[in-house]
Length: 223
Image (cartoon, rainbow, N blue to C red):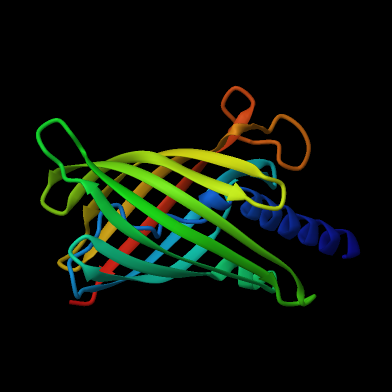
């Protein structure tokens, strides 16, 4: 029994540490495009980097939930709570904004900028406060009404070690009801980092760098 408990705790630790290491893979709850002014949307995402677990490779079961609010036609604010982090007695929050830099025109995609900051605090031990700023550029095409194909890159900065983690992504969002939109997204997490050895060894690394992540998201409009 003690061996099983030890293995379980080790698995929890690995999932948690890898999730934090690949912070730019903590969900897809940032908007692809600004939402309409005066509207509110509830968002959630599930998934993460692919890791070895019980002899199989699975995405980290990382869950986020939050909300978006359209402040202006070209400015959306949002915030999220990291539900999975709470299971490890770690408070995880993030907040940011989304703004359109260029509208879609002809073959040119719409270009949006997301700026956000992650905050993590070890509530159990009462220390280890961590703050990570991140900037994201996203290009998107409207495939049909309420459906978008998009791609881009997250750029997360770890101030303590002066490290920059770059994560490219590609995704598709589509309606699943009158007020709901689903997102499917794949990321090459920390694509500029060597992950060939140690606890951060990627189960789905590309040429020994980073790790592939798989995410599912849902946006529900309250208007």
